[in-house]
Length: 440
Image (cartoon, rainbow, N blue to C red; front, side, top):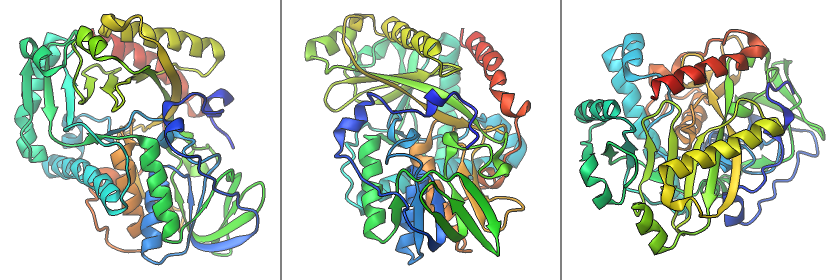
C-alpha cells in the first residue's frame, strides 16, 4: 500500500469509547482463493451497506477489510447522522449544477438520513439513537446573522422549517455557552456508530455476504475480464469491484486514486459521566447533537450515559509530537467553551481520518476507464448518513440498475486530482490558517 500519512495514522485504534460498547466481532481472513460476482474493498458504512443490499438482491458478494471490524472512520466517528457529505457551499453547488442541481443534492442529503434510519429500523439495530435533528450554534454575531438567512432557505431546499433560538434563550434550552444564537433543523439523529456498524455487519452476514477481516488488498489488477484482489493469505477474483476505503485509501489501489483524495485527521475526547450538578453548572443539559459555525468546527453532544463527546479537526501529521500538541489543543478549546468542566476527567481520546475531495463533493459511481470498478468516497466528515446512502446506490449501479434512491449529478461527477501529488498534505497548513482567520 502507498498511503500518504505516517504509519501511526493507520495504527491501533487505542482507547476509542465506542469499542467497549459492543461485543468484539470476528471476521475471519480470506484464507483460500475464491471467486465472487462483486468484491467490496473496505468494511465501513459504505462497504457494509453495499454488501448488505447486494446480498439482499441475491448477488454473491465478498467484503475485504484491511484490519479488524470497525477499524476505520466508521468505527471511530462522532456518531452524527445528519445533513452533509459535501464541503462545497450552496452557492458553489448552484454555480456548478444550477438551481435544480442544488435542490437535487439537498434532497439527497435528506434521503441519506432516511437510508440510515431505514437500515436501523429494517434490521432492528439498537444504535442508541437520540437527538431531535441537529443544532448549529453561531460562534460570532456575523455567524448568527448568516444562520438567520440560512433558516429562510430551509423550506425550499429541505422541505422543513428550521427553529431559531436567539442568544438570550439558549440557556433555557440547555444550550448555554459562548454562542450568539442557534438554528435547529429537524432532520437527523445521533447514534453509537459502533453499534450501527455491528448491526449492519450482522444483517449483511445474515443475507449471505462474506465478510473478511485482516485481509488488506495489496494489489488490484484486471486480467482476463476479471478483477484480481491480492491479500496476504489468498487472492479473490471478482467480476466487479467496489472501492469503499475513503480516507484510508491507498495511492495505488488502483493508480486512478492517486492524488484524488485528501485524508485529514479529526480528534475526539469523551468525558467521564457528568452528574446532574455538573451539567447544570455548565448550562448544557440538551441531548441535541450540535456543532458550531467555525470553518474548523467543533462538534459535541451529551451521550445517553451523560458522558460528553467533543470533537474537532486534528493535527496535520500523526507524529507523537503532533499528537501531543493536538491533545493539548482539544482540551484548551473544550475548556474555553465549557469552563465549568475544566476539572472533569477525560476518559477516552482518539483520532481518525476523514476524506476531503478537490471539488469538495463526494463521488459515487463507476470509475472512469476502469471497466467493472466502482467507488464511493469523499464524505467530508459526514459519512454516517451519506456513506450508508452511497452503499445503497452502488449496490444498484454495479448491477446495471437504475438507482432506487436519490442520485444527483453532484455525486456522479468524477473527482479531480489535488495539486502536488503525494505532497498534497502541504496544502492543509495554509488552508487551516486561512480557515482560522475566517473564524475570528
